[in-house]
Amino acid sequence: AWWRGCVARAQVRETRQQHRAEAESLAALMVQCAWRGFVARRERTRLAREREQARQEAAAIMLQAAWRGRSARRRVKQIRAELRSMEHDGYIKRLRQAVMARDNERQRALQIQAATRGFLTRKQFSKLRAKRVRQMREDAEVERLLQEQKEETEQVAKLVFEGSVSMIVDEMAGQ
Image 1 (cartoon, rainbow, N blue to C red):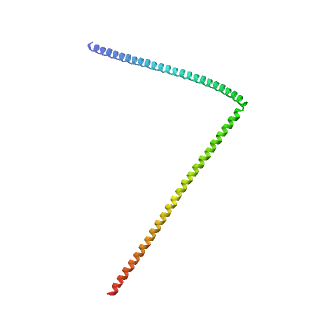
Image 2 (image 1 turned 90 degrees about the vertical axis):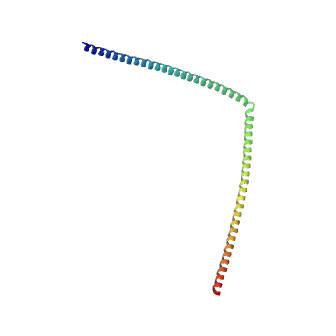
Image 3 (image 1 turned 45 degrees about the horizontal axis):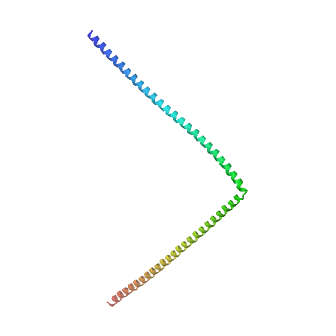
């Protein structure tokens, strides 16, 4: 009886621990499920807000583009009307002549600038060429002087050698 009681109490204790573990596991699952639901709802709300904001921005851009187009069309219409009224006064003809005169003046200025740059470049080139020719002449002169010096040295060496040889021959003949 005592033994059966110990075994029964152990089984009850084990069963209670299993139930407690299952309850804790179930509670953890419920907390996790609730948290994931909360995060998902928050994300859905954020995405819906962004979608709505993007839709409103697109609508605002469309309205702005329509307004700008309308304003531009009105301005073009107004400018055309002004041009038609100016044509009668000969204003357009005078304006075109002024623009052409300004363009001709600009073209002449460019031609003068190009001629000046060409002149200065040719002048600089001729100076460089003269300097190069002068340098080449100096180099040729130095080369010529070195060649003359070499020939003189060879002649002196030849005379010295011939003189030494003849002295040695004379000495040998005298003995």
